[in-house]
Amino acid sequence: MRRAQVRRVYAKSAYNPSTASNRLRGHAIFGGGVAVAGALRLSTENRMKSATMQNSALPLSPPTIALVDDDRNILTTLSIALQAEGFVTRVYQDSELALKALLDNPPNLAIFDIKMPKMDGLELLRRLREKSALPVIFLTSKDEELDEALGLAMGADDYVVKPFSQRLLVARVRAILRRASLNASPADTEEDLPDPIVRGALIMDPARHSVTWNGTPVSLTVTEFLLLEALANRPGVVKTRSQLMDAAYQDDVFIDDRTIDSHIKRLRRKFREVDGEFAGIDTLYGAGYRFNLS
Image 1 (cartoon, one colour):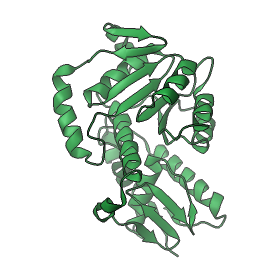
Image 2 (tube, one colour; image 1 turned 180 degrees about the vertical axis):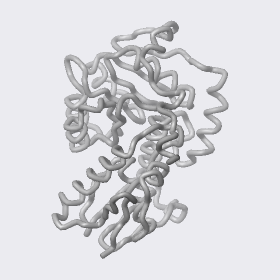
Image 3 (cartoon, rainbow, N blue to C red; image 1 turned 45 degrees about the vertical axis):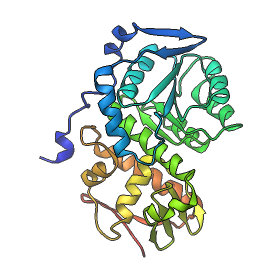
Image 4 (cartoon, rainbow, N blue to C red; image 1 turned 60 degrees about the vertical axis):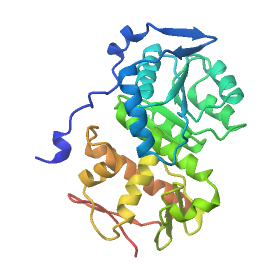
């Protein structure tokens, strides 16, 4: 049986609003934000040590993640999950109050829901980008592809589609924080960074998550970057959808073939925006995809 077919439908840590409703005790609301008391203390210290060892490029002090969503259950569940991985969280149900807090006391990264009252996630991002380059991840629903495209065009760093695995979200947070940390690192650490990947007109810098095609920057999400990297590392070699899943997702995260196809479609569209004749990714029907140097 193909591996993609036997993946668990959702990870054990997948977000489920119905399990979050009983976790609100111990949370105090301050001016629209929620100060989350240290949940899951027994596992936090060990996970913090593990996260520090795995992410040497991240700051030594625990990174702060701001969560903005009008759904209190989501805020609670994500706060607990992120704290268990060693992060500090600030959460906000009011996007207008969140904007002020993000500008006055910036966290290391913010996670927004797109659909919110008063000011939705897209407008919050637009106003934030007027004054800040703070890394942002969007939470979206499957029917919000247009909003995803708008969010990425406005400067969001990545998006995660609901329902989602918390492990996937944490992996995306770490990847974006690592990239931001490396972008700010001093020049004397250059010798420790991985070499860029050069494939004809394509140049990928894994350390800084940057991509250019014929010298023109191409903005990719973390997932898109990982998929392209997997293809570009072995030009001419066919990668199955299952192999691409392994390159971009955790083993216990369920996705179907159409998700990979959608990401490849977006990759092609982004490259064709800078080169209308781009043909660097071939489809081999029934087999998978390959990077084409010709």
